[in-house]
Figure: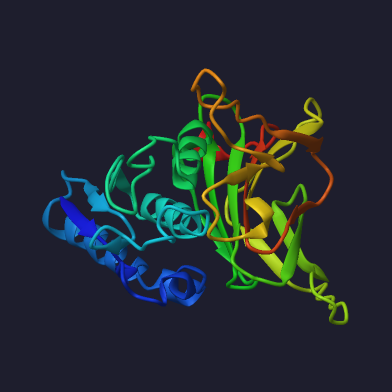
Length: 278
């Protein structure tokens, strides 16, 4: 069963960026996914859910929005949410064309969402792990079995414009979050009791000492930049026109995971064992 999805509304809406960065607005579409999943369960359990077309904002997307870094907050969040509700196929509108094309329609240079899609494709496996959280709604989290290897890959999306979240991962699979710092000049705020609980059970082995991080930010901190940075390096085609290497940063697996305001991070944890990924 297929459906088309443009939950951001019209591309000419001047409030597109505000919608993209509003966690409560982004969560509204979960009801659509939930309703479709229940319809299939009741009336066609042999079928599966497909998103046959989705571009965020309809009528060719938003000018200077859909082809920029800020759109990846919506895009990756919706990929995570659609997988959570058992969507089997997700078709992005479009590869080339409109403001929401994954490639620039004249130069064919990849827009930021292209790299977001490529990282999702390379890192996130088919096994979806449930995540429940009591943390800030501005920190979105999704977890999958890693693709093509052991372990778990977590996607963190920080929609806050001033809060850096620090995530501590423990053997109990409780991820404790607290506000590490405010990025403006206001007095520092600490919230040591804020917790995030991951609902799968796992353990950490002794063999691996590093995790992989793919931290996505906009060039010069400008959310409407058409250039995405991976771990501080601009993602640009090589001189031969090839896709650049998407190399992760390697960090001590036991060190806290930090995600800065208005940024996105994939974290591959190869030494985490989850029954759902066996």
